[in-house]
Picture (spheres, helix red, strand yellow):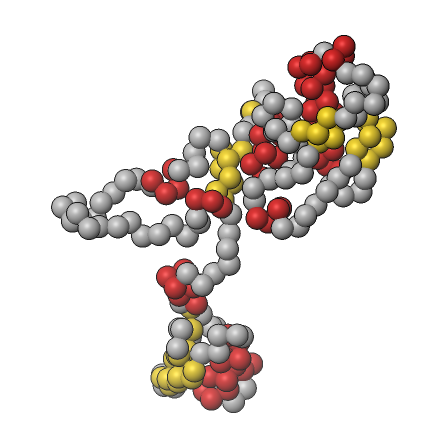
Length: 215
């Protein structure tokens, strides 16, 4: 059987008699199995009589060509973000000045770079570069629209005393933010009651698209 975008076609072969039978029904895009069972029902009275079935479909290819699939993101190593779009740089029509490359399936804004470091045993460590990853993710519509927020309380040694339940996995990164702030300004810079509000991920770090409050 072959499930196409418009029709689902069938060929039935009887090994005992050598007889061939064909059938065609409309494809049911919402549930392809409906059309399949309908077509098989026209050709075979009892499906248990079928010993072997070969199945093919262009449903996936059609979704690919018509670009009706789900929106996807691509995560790649830092420095390789544009490789996907550049590809091999082939020009099928070398002298066609109006030639345009096909639009990539993944838009550039949905390609994210991840810093990584390979350890001696082959495992990958990304903890040291979490700041850079969080900074980039702050502009991701998936994260931004969720409006997530987390809160952590630290002592004067930059050790966490408590945290909220929002996204606790990112709160460990705030400890490093506070340490960097102290190193930058020095403890003598601060007076009792001072409050610093920062959203510069490069200088002092931050949590997603929110601000870091340092009191």
